[in-house]
Amino acid sequence: MTKQVISAPAPTRLFTSDNAAGVHPDVVAAIVRANESHALAYGLDKYTKQAKDAFSKLFDADVRTEFVFGGTGANVLALACILKPAEAVVCTSWSHIAVDETGAPERILGAKLIDLPSLDGKLRPQDLHSVSHLRGHVHHVQPAVVSITQSTELGTVYSPSEVREICDTAHELGMLVHMDGARLSNAAAVYGATPEALRSFTIDAGVDVLSFGAMKAGIMFGEAVVFLKPHLGNRAEYIQKQITQLNSKMRFISAQYVELFRDGLFFRLGEQANAMALALFERTKHHKALQLDRAPQVNSLYPILAQPARSALQDWSFFWDWDVAAQQVRWMTAWDTTLADVEAFAVGVDQALKM
Image 1: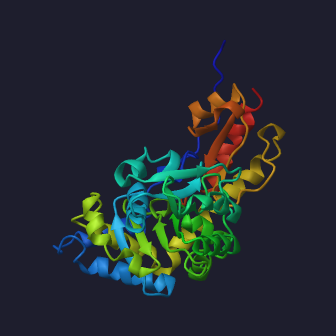
Image 2 (image 1 turned 45 degrees about the horizontal axis):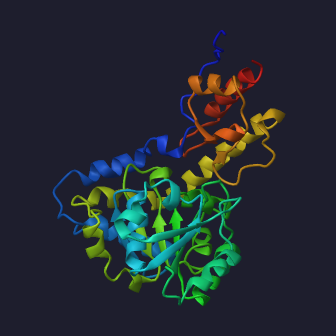
């Protein structure tokens, strides 16, 4: 059989993942500036103080912030600070901590994850009640932390009221709430792309500890753990070192956040990524075979793409399979995706579906 090949020029940028995107030029410039002279190590530099102050300003509260190398480290540090022995984390079966972090929470923390099924990637109050009977019984691990992802691994978004309901229920049951904010800028863009929008589903909704994701939103490396209830991070600096997440040259992480929060850049980049996903949806939704029935909430689409179109498109401009059995794939936009990229990719889709 002759291999099908798409003849159209491929887009400049991939629709694989926002992790594939580059670093915003302003952030690169901030790293270069931080490199101009010596600075004290382990966070004792001026950039780290500025960044921590910026986080408190962002949340309009005296929060505690610690920087780590990446998203898995952020989640592990956050959970390590709020879990005790014989306690468990309640999450969905889609969550990164359950399926995409190579068992890091279980190995490093020795904590059980109670991963519950979810059709849309979200937890709901009744899910917490379904495991509450385990609390107080010596033969059962104790559900102590609820971990939710914003936006979720399925591209859905918790509304502020949904987060508040989760937090209220968790707190009533004696549990704390951790948010894995892998795509916070995209979620904030849904509700207005402002600090107030971000607060509405984090600190104002009752979240206790937040893994603040920014590598998908224009920075080079380094994530943050924000203790929205500062006392929960009383031992964070010691635990951070113990789990190998203390960066000696922390200024290069911190300087990026100082720049990212300047003039709303963080929120603008989330808006751009979301807008490009919507543009791709509008340009390709007429293909009934893709089964794109609903506009994306954030920056990902999950079309159905059968062979030979799927292989032809992936050879031409790579993207990931999602649910192989269902012939479902994922297309994801990023902060630097352009309308020209969208149009080029859509032309390729047009050609592939005619094969």
